[in-house]
Image (tube, rainbow, N blue to C red):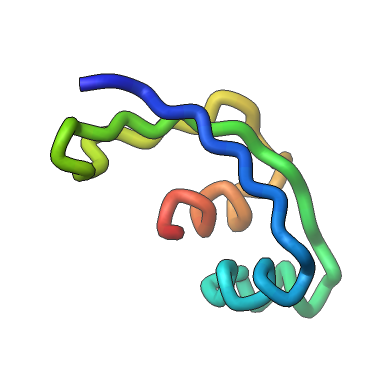
Length: 68
């Protein structure tokens, strides 16, 4: 087992389709943020742990990020 650090930089058109589970309340209030999380992935590609290491400051966004 190992940890993966993943940084994705995509044009806005891809970001929209990537984050379809963006919290409705955050979308309506134009809330956005940046967070850092550790994701543990097994050798066969399954996720075994997710840990927020730096919060976005908004629990709704942190929870949504775990579901992506």
